[in-house]
Image (cartoon, rainbow, N blue to C red; front, side):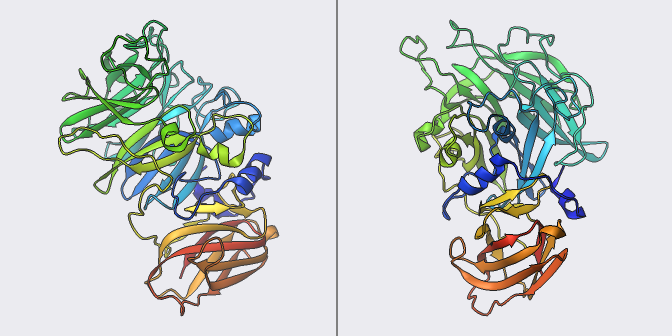
Length: 486
């Protein structure tokens, strides 16, 4: 369900034990924009830029955590849904909810044939004059499916009722893992999909298990026979981009010790390598690597999975790390969180080694709070839970959310709060700007009294400029669905 479901007065389910633990223990400093959200785990990012908004789709590691309680490593086997987040400024993110994809394994998705949904890929294409959104996913390592929607946040339906790519697809029977799709729509409207991974023990230098193939105009059938990409030391995680007139195939290298390798390049372990071509289907030429394993930057090792994208004429890279599980203190690992950093391209088209940071990227525009803002929208939070309807509930007094870079220059006089569950409305919401975690300047205070909507006057007399970080500090109980400045 998308976040708009929270605006219709529905009641949320109870808060789970793991949601409460995440709320109480997850945390990032004021100068940190990574992970992009800390209240839930997600991995294998796929990015869609549509109009003025960036959408990030991810494997729902939180679903696995609810099953294991963090007492077992992440085995991914219970994951049959995906997370969606969106942002207009790359710093404040809205949790758009969880979308059901697979229909087996207890799943509620429309892909009834699939047991899992991992490592999504996303594309938008205009079909019969209307934007259609195509979400590709891996059913474990056994095939790739596609679901379609008229909206970037779903609901998604399975148009073909079977895998798009399977062991019966030509040249794919010998691929170790049919997973980790990447998708790309070229400037001429032609679509392409890239996928595959894994290696036999004696073929780790040149596994030849990556594939690429064109898609038909409907984006739900392949057009031709999948071609082999000979990516050195391939392990997983296909990516595809067009920069200028050059196509870049990117991927994660494997974990085999290189000491006995005879390959002259000897790609490092678990880094993001890249190859280029003047044709979307290759042949691709190996060039080097561009992103180190997250352990190099953060000391938390794990697999590497990425998506390179362009927003407002600037390149970025989304990837995942295992830093958040350390913050939360899980007994066992493998639970990932999403990062976004700047992505540099040299003038000659080569790709330098990128920087992974907790600081993340700069806010690309001021936050406009004059329209209704879903409650599950923030740059950081502490001691709050986002419910299954994307409403916001504090679990302790002093809980807060922070929305960075809010534009106050429009002469606002009031703030309006809307609540989904009147029975929970008791206590106070204090509105402050700047400072950290409640130490800033108070501009409003809202006493909750079981009304579904509550306005409060704003005191902006002490503000010296038009842009500020906005904090909501919660005391008592409530279920906030949305807010706006008036």
